[in-house]
Image (tube, rainbow, N blue to C red; front, side, top):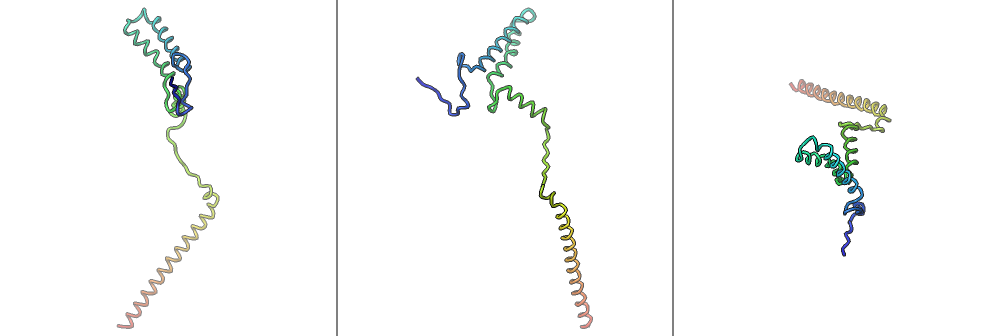
Length: 146
């Protein structure tokens, strides 16, 4: 006698009827009931071949609800997640960073930036003055030489 043991305990499902879990059995029973109801209500109105296809198409949603699992979710959990993601939550997600530290010290940062710009302007003017002084000295020395 062999007993199969799942590696992951969360994947365990107890077989109740005909090797089906309770959930699968209930939805299979619902699918059969829907097929029978469709058969008897539509039998006088349409042909037998078309009626068989209608019964199959009517039973498929219930069979899917009982047997399908997607990413570990049952069908109704998946449907709820799909509705939330597609219709309830917004499509475009925008990310706006908020630097609390920068906001706290915004005044200080702006003040330091202004001071830094002023210092850079002073350095630029000093460099420019040095260059003009050098060029004046060169012009004066050239005048003396000639």
